Amino acid sequence: MSKRDMDDESFFEDLAGARPAEPRAPARLKSRVYSALMRRAAEEGPLRSLTATKEAGSALCVFEEFCQSLPLGARFDALNFCRACHGRVVGEHMDRAPIFWKGCPYADFHRH
Image (tube, rainbow, N blue to C red; front, side, top):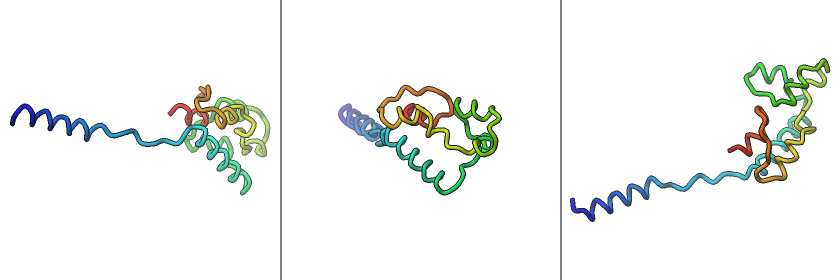
């Protein structure tokens, strides 16, 4: 194999391996879709309680952890706490929202 053939072969191998990144939806759009899905779920009936969510292995954000520790009763345990959180508002309106807390879906959208 000549040097040119080897150069051509390595060029095409490099070209084949260098695929463009998968297109991704913007974090703002992901945040808005998530909010809309949560609103729709809340309209259809009570959401899964924070206790059940945590027991199922899902993470709770700092705000939800705090609210779960309060003696608010079962009625408050199934509220959509994201509706009252500033993380949702920032996540829906900024491209790179400065949301850093663990367990927050809006933070996860902006992290990736």
